[in-house]
Length: 333
Image (cartoon, rainbow, N blue to C red; front, side, top):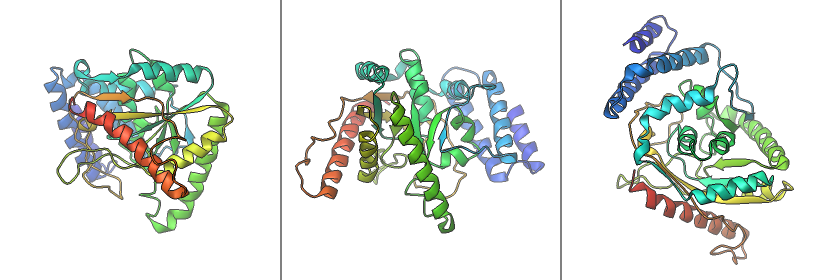
């Protein structure tokens, strides 16, 4: 129980706020239970857990500042593979699957031609980047590792998430849901977002970039019937990527991607304004499903004359593509 002893000691010495200590206690017990269910032993992962705790304490003492575009850190410490190794024991790989790998092959070919690719996807759990990389580790490891994720402020500011975020390529942005809170920070957040958009334009102008974005602006949550469904997509978010792709000087391809990862680390049932959510790890199969390339100009309702209505029609259409893929894989999770 060295991990829990160290957490308790850190709380007692005021190096760790008690709410975070409580969260770590709960997380450890759920992580241990999940690993036991998988037939493994948590003792095998104590070095990882202790290193994770060191990273959390370091973040609290000296917060790491993410640039608008953060490139995954692999030296002197490999945060990318640390994240994969930490999540790996929670995934029942023998029951997990990537559907339609032929589209991944096509995407890789397009990237090799210096085209850009935008993945319009749902988002279910904090370690979705690690989940994607684990699922593509055997077939397309380089593609997964080079992927760029549009990330909200929570994953770059919560001390329990930062160690994993450090290993990913991130375009860091404040989502609509959080830009108004607190009001006095709104202008600062807007300036940060403008810097991120400028950096993204530069990346697309370089070509050969694959960017994952969740146009919902957050994670999927259970509906009134308790069923986890794909959150609706924001038309403005999709339009922004569409316009930026046109200005990049490179062909840009848009693909739908569905993730069924919710059970890995379920989010709170409601969106929290403040940091510090509880985390309950589970051992579960996960699934990804890539879809056919999206025609961004021709879609149901594209003949609509009103520009706003046309954008809404496109967002609903793309959402329906992801939702259809999700419905086929969610029953297997």
